[in-house]
Length: 136
Length: 197
Image (cartoon, rainbow over all chains, first blue to last red; front, side):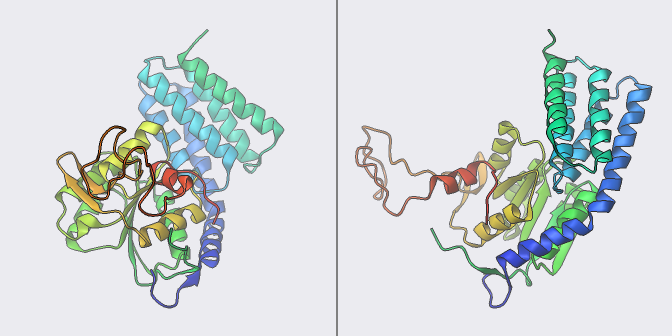
């Protein structure tokens, strides 16, 4: 690491960010595929699919965690958290999953842009996730 | 604290990337390539990574924590305790998606060198790699822990005790033998947070 030569740290960071930027379009398509799969699960509501929902949510967190798309990451994280807590409390609720899936679809359709309306939606998701295991 | 270098040369380093999500593996790969790493080895599972490091050495391992079958924690625990020398001393940066406090502690206690929470930025990851380049922590091997020394705070011995080592200071004195680390830097060793380079 300390050998002669190398690149300035700022350049290394800029090149890494550029590399991520080049993969943004392809990554968003993969995220869309996962969200579509999530929406299909919400429509079918198969029994015992909590593990599958958690795996999808976890994959969404995993991938979006590399991109500068905070609203999508926050919504995916909220779903991951809600799925984990609902499964642990044996209190599975598809409507809670569905509202997250719809929010993820909306955020993707809006090119993952933030804003006041998105902030309100994310606050709503957090409330839903909380309500999922602490009803009333 | 040593001065942060202006340049970094990773052209001669070999980095192992481990993630079960192909897209995430590609994204991580593009970050590392941007850092100037010439040789990258990619594994889609921790089990594959175990096989690989038994065959050849690497300079750095970046591994996702959450994976099916063998997860990142199990891999690091295996690496530290069962791998042969010198591969067991290889620095490991764990990447954590769901950064609950218990999971951060689990990563630290299995022997990870650093833990980076998502959302991950190249600047934060590179900062940790630079820290590894100036690593001064000793490698600890005791019954219930193998990995970089986790004792990063210098509080001196408990009040009222003299201390057992020559370099221990009294609790009343409370003064470090050498310059104290910044609290921010100490916190960085224990919990991930964003850093501006």
